[in-house]
Image (cartoon, rainbow, N blue to C red):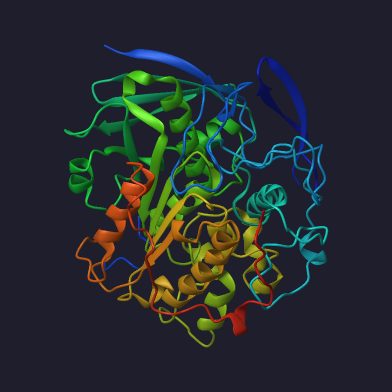
Length: 477
């Protein structure tokens, strides 16, 4: 692996600490047929001296004191400082309230493809790259950073190459996001539809292409809707198109991570633009199908998001690559489920680096139970669809079950929910209690109603631990 030196700036009080960084529309096949402005730098927020970020263990987003904006670490950075094993004095033990946890964690050099060993099981999320077993929350923060680095190195390409300075302005129901500091300055807008009930600043649901949930009902509950037209950030069929590549001058990253970068810049703008009337500490992200893949990537790669709802995301989303490969054995043509090679070949959702795993899925040192687990302990509701074989129901069930073990290790088992049923693709004609689950998770994580019952676990298939899991989940302290 070649290292690309970059720098992140982490603000604690008024002290700026330079940290050296090293890193190593067809659908998914499942479709039938007067302004104010303000500025934030970069995207990673940390509490100023004497304040605190959201707690790691609570069910909701928690509360935080005043925050100071810093240059974005972008998720594709690994910093020198604390080692990967053991607790480190002053280590970042927060998993919520900042874009990328683990800014003071060292990530080892990531092995080249030829150095990777095959593993038929879902990889152990609780073993660091150097072999250290994760037993504490502080260690999990660094493991979270390792998983983020692996996702970007082997699957998506980097989220952040150049530091970003973000300004936001709002007028006529639109938030304009201006991003400077890259190869080119870029901007894009999102539509904000405020609810008729509640008190500003409102919680908000960011929907890729508006999302596919019942937005009218959510607005009745007091939740604003933000329509994120993400294809302008990067079209899924062109890695060099869109403002992501214009800003970074880099065309290798796939669409999913580019969409995650754009969503993070929206949050930056919301944090510095109170006239938008949106509470940036109470945000959800959702999308269906290809946009479900995007929603999961966004929720995993920005820990400021309180609730993530990936809907019918299939392979490349919630579903585990390894399970998809096994379930697809012997299938040809349009039969079977979408596995890694089919996913890579359909659209440019991922970087070119993932192609080498098309016939060697078991050499991937991670799988998507770990991507799902990156959302922990924040709110996560997975919605499936039994009517479409291509969507990899069992594969998502297995990954979701393994990810639930990560939530359980963090003492947050009731913060992850799952509902499978049959219905129209990306429709709201739910048959398995999806609407009730959506409203429960929205109440708990956006409306901060701790009485909401999110103990909802209804996948079609239980996790087959004997087949897929050869590790145990610790209780992280």
